View (cartoon, rainbow, N blue to C red):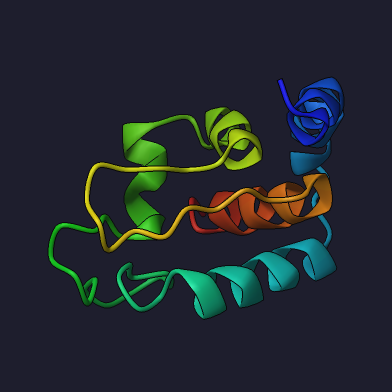
Length: 107
């Protein structure tokens, strides 16, 4: 297990607890991150279709998975079976920001 993953797993419960009290800054940083890294394939806002038809809209992720459960995948590195999806491995503060943004889309 990599040091990054071990540290992320150690801090993951703290990150999850902070989602309930996410700040506007965290939500905005998460929005900026997904806009820069995910919007070429996924719909990352409250409206609109995903540019890549098979890519789920982020506003619907909470209907498929508990958003909090995505934290571990973000820490380990998201990989998929199709070649167009880049691999991501986020730092703990980036995970908190992205999850805060995803939670804000549930409202």
